[in-house]
Every structure is written in C-alpha cells, then in structure tokens.
Length: 83
Image (tube, rainbow, N blue to C red):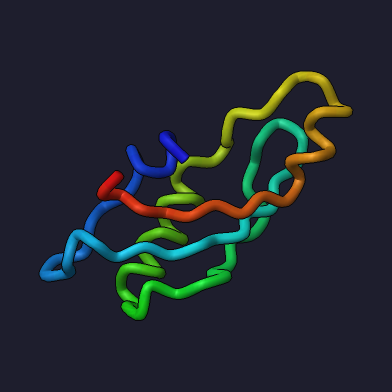
C-alpha cells in the first residue's frame, strides 16, 4: 500500500476523502499482472489514477518464501490516501 501511495498522482479537483477497494494479482517477483476495482470511489478519474499507481509501483514487495507468497498472489486493499 505504501509503495502504491508513493506512485499515486491525485487527480485535480477531487475531494481528499475518496477511497476505493482494488484487487491486485501478482506473480513471483512482485510484478503486477492485473488490477481491478472491487468498490469504486464514485469517481472514474480517482479509480483510474489508483489503477495506474498500482501498475507504476510494480514490482511490489513480496516475501521470498514461496509458501508465503502463494497467499499473496491476489490481494485486495482499500486505497485511502488520506490515512
């Protein structure tokens, strides 16, 4: 989440309280293979900016132990830049 937040560019003229939930699929090494919006913020510009930030943050940090990584192949998280 921290790496995605660092890569995110806030679209102009949007309230700071927007959030969305994303599903991210990754492969060993942390490369992002897909991003989808699970729950929209209500703003297409915000949602697309979050998707772009996830792809820019690739590769994401992953555990070196493949057994632990298997639990993280698909993750969901709430993107809330205000927190």
